[in-house]
Every structure is written in structure tokens, then in C-alpha cells.
Amino acid sequence: MEDFKGFKYKIEADPDYSFLTVEVPADQRLKVEASAMATMDTCFEMKTKFKGGFSRFLTGESIFINEFTSKGVPGEIGIAPGCPGDMRHVYLDNQTIYLQNSAFVASSINIEVLSKWQGFVKGFFSGEKLFLIKCSGTGDLWFNSFGGIIEIDVTDNYVVDTGHIVAFTDGLDYNISSVGGMKSFFFSGEGLVCKFSGKGKVWIQTRKTSPFVWWANYFRPQSSN
Image 1 (spheres, rainbow, N blue to C red):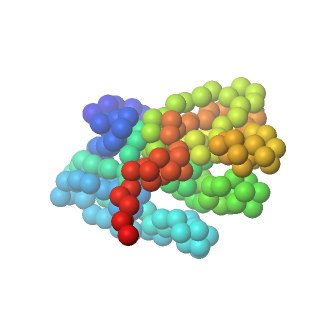
Image 2 (image 1 turned 30 degrees about the vertical axis):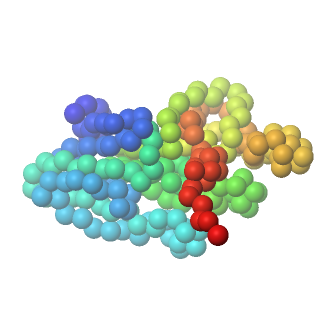
Image 3 (image 1 turned 45 degrees about the vertical axis):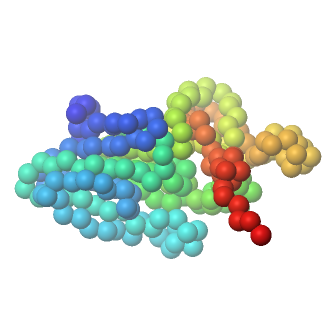
């Protein structure tokens, strides 16, 4: 187990199929994305909490986060995200990070996890979901990606394809636009981009889902007539 400011943890099988193991002290709790628990000691009790409000329900997002309490003694819990890829840990010190809608893996209990409305321009027209996940407070936060994760320090302006964004820190402003004109948008193979400005960090993923689905579809068995 690696020892940090918060809970002891280790990440294995990264960057392809990351698996997280967290040591939870006695009588303390851990928030875990629904259905991500893979293994745990028998001392744990689980409760399911409704997170994000009715807004996340309408978008089809996961609306439940499970809370695991290690009753009486320390315990280890193993967490396997649904998406194959990398994982990162950040210890927030009264800070805020925004995650793409599927990136949340786990957090300590005092991290507030909420949905943030992006608005129709930033959300609907970006090709992504209308909500980001806002994680704020003091404690541990783990998030994952599709593919590997690269951390980038933004000091002024930076452009990222919307499908490659995993997370970014509070304080960065962003706007959605196309790389070129409408012809480029439809025929270049490039989609919409997010233009960040300010100072902070952005975590990007080395793959995005839509090109992977297109690639995998070529190998899909075809029925013969």
C-alpha cells in the first residue's frame, strides 16, 4: 500500500485495466461508484445513496453512489471501474475538480460529489453529456479514463478535443468550438474542441470512445442473407 495524506491505497494493472485497493480505517467510510466494488473484507457494511438529484436521472447517468463503512476494524476494498483504462489519485485540500460524467471511481466521505449543469451550448453541442461531476472538499479522490491518462499544466490557453477530456481543476474557464468551419466539422474527422483559459491542470485520456466504436464495428460479425 502507498501512504499519502489520506487513505492508504494501491493501483494495480494500470494503465490498461486499473484496479484500486483502498485500506479504510475502522469506522470510516468510502464512496464508490455504483457496481464498481470487486472485493472487500467482511467488516464492511454498504449503503446506497442517491447522488446528483433528478437532473442526473434525466440524463441516464448513474445516480447511485455506494458508501462502504469498515465496522470496528480496518478493512480493504477492491474497486474495478467499468471502463478499461488508467486511474489517478488526487488529494484535494479544500479544492474542486470537475470530472467527465463517467470518470468518478471513489472518494473519501468528506468529498462532496455533485452534478454541474454545463448549459446547452457547452453540453449538448459538445457531443458530451449535459453534466459534469463536481468533486470538492478535503480528502481522497480517484478517477479513471478510457486509455491512458496524461496530466497537463495549463498556464494560459490550451485546446483539447472534447472526447479526450477526463478532468480539470476549478479556476479554468472553457468554451466549446469547432476546429475549423462547418465543412471541417463534418468531413475532417475532427470534432468539437474545448478551449481552456487560465491556470490549472487538465487530465486527458489517450483514447476516446466514438472512434473505438467505429473501429470495432468493422470486426463485428455480419449475418449472411
